[in-house]
Image (spheres, rainbow, N blue to C red):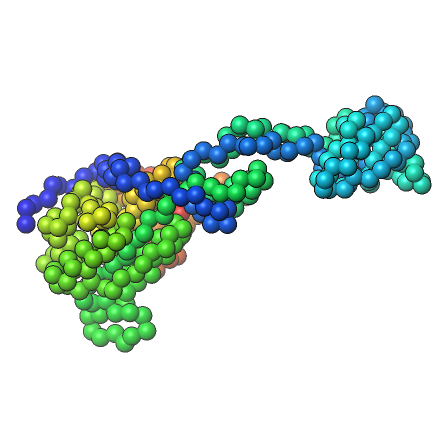
Amino acid sequence: MTEFATSILFDEAREILRQVAATHRLPVEHVALARAHGRVLAGDIVAPIALQPFDNSAMDGYACRHADLCAAGTASLALVGEQFAGRALGLHVGAGECVRITTGAPMPAGADTVVMREDTQIDGDAVTMRAGIRQGANVRKAGEDALPGDPVLRAGTRLNAVQVSLAASLGVERLPVSARPTVAVFTTGDELIEPGMPLQPGEIYNSNRELLMGLLRAEGLEPVAWPTLPDEPERIASMLQDAASSFDVVITCGAVSAGEKDHIPALLQAHGCVHFWKVRMKPGMPLLAGSLGQAQFLGLPGNPVSVLATFLTLGRVLIDGMQGRADRPSRFARLQSGIEKMHPRREFVRGTLQVDDTGTQWVTPNAATGSHRLRAAADADALLVLAEGARSLAQGDLVEVLTY
């Protein structure tokens, strides 16, 4: 096998994946709102109508003219009608008059203020209003949230429930979203046994499958788990090529280092295209990226914390980019204890987040360093991002964190 290039910097790997993803953007679909949750918006949405569409009441009470209210004393107004939430009845409020109104109901013509029911007294058709009500009180003005033509949702947004609700409030029935990538997931190694089966000496349970499937589902995807790849190059090649013919992305765990049973780098070089192999990061240095058939290919290392770190930091870059998702905002926390970093690679350290009484977010590094220490990852909820180069970080220093 021809020797691959030497390892590359983490930022180089990220930029390569961004460029690959940009040239393999998935097609746009127009989906009903009920199917838009968690999808990546593929185009800007502008308001087709005003929001609010009309002046309406923010409270149950009485709509009136502020000019008829008194600043220093009570005012008695004649009740001339009722307007409930629903179709406008065409009511008009004249001098000395008011209309009973409910929350969300359209304001009658002539009225500019709503007095809450609690600030009134009723005597037949006479309504006494307390003093000191400000002009425009309890009125929601048309267009105060958005005007027609205002951009309200931006392309690249992963839509949450509130954003889909906003689209519904504007009468938008369908949204343009990027197709979700189809993902085939493989774990590798003759030593892997499925949970529930008895272990023989030298065997371990297959935990990476559940780890990677769960991480992908958290991204709103529906990955497909394939059978475990055996340590046989011909069968590995056949199974990977089969998946690559019908999936957008193929992800493997294990068999990407330089051992005698690590067949995947050579197979990808022989049957596909290698973008890079080995990234100067810890954990996860043997990460392999390329293409095979119609699929983009990611070969993650086999240790579980390496799977976690490489997917959160670089796997997401590919998945996000193929859908045109906007960059995720960075998140930072202060170190609860100091860290001495002695090596030159970018490092991702397990840690636990907490917020103190002042609202400051802190992160406590986990003492476990081995990439096989899955329990330490389960006890944590974030990865601390430590930049390249040896460095000494003190308690209270600000560090970037990736949550999972």
